[in-house]
Length: 264
Image 1 (tube, helix red, strand yellow):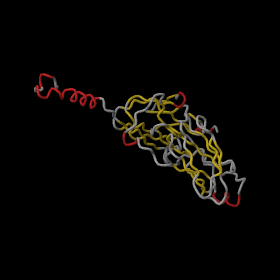
Image 2 (cartoon, rainbow, N blue to C red):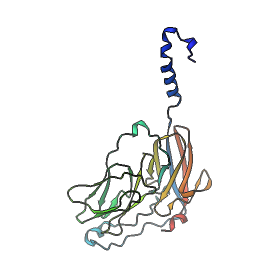
Image 3 (cartoon, helix red, strand yellow):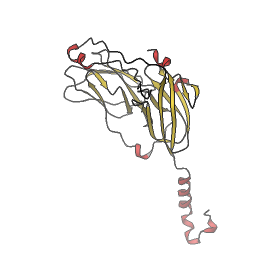
Image 4 (cartoon, rainbow, N blue to C red):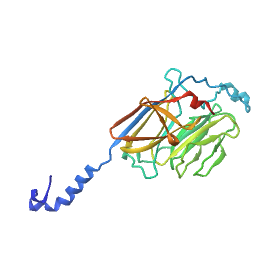
């Protein structure tokens, strides 16, 4: 340990700076990559074919189905589960993720929104385009931000950003084609993810500590109950409280029953 008695008198003036550096090193933030897989137990019906009631000649040729519940029959993975860090206080952000993120895309393609779940940070630009030969609009039912419903221009992207985070994923419709649906997940930090076709997710560089993570799917809303580490766990408003203390934290398989997803 460095003390005044161990330093030559000519170097005593360095002591405050040495102590400052030691303190910074001791309190440096550590980070964790959070991973897991949401799976479904029980039988889930295949997605039903949608009834096309507008622009049938174009939209009817794409074999559109209800995408509100997508389960991989091989892995049983549940697609489009949203998981995000929920905090009433500011969340430390890893230095590599503090820069302003690039615009994110929400495309109108083949009379459906692509992707169905859009991850968006506050003040990040949302670009919506229309690749179809029919007119689409984007109706965003924001709660903390200003809602809007605007026709997507043919010659350039429709661009919008949101100053405030939203407490829940917010619905996006096309008012012209009633079956089209998407959701925006708007957070003021980068610690959010949506599961892929195998139900897997990964959130990198999460600050270590004890945090609440919310889980949500468009069928039940907040996930009401899951099986985690072999134990049935009731979730209050979809909340998992996790203590992250290692560089990697894997939740493993997080199971939800088919019955919990059946109600629309």
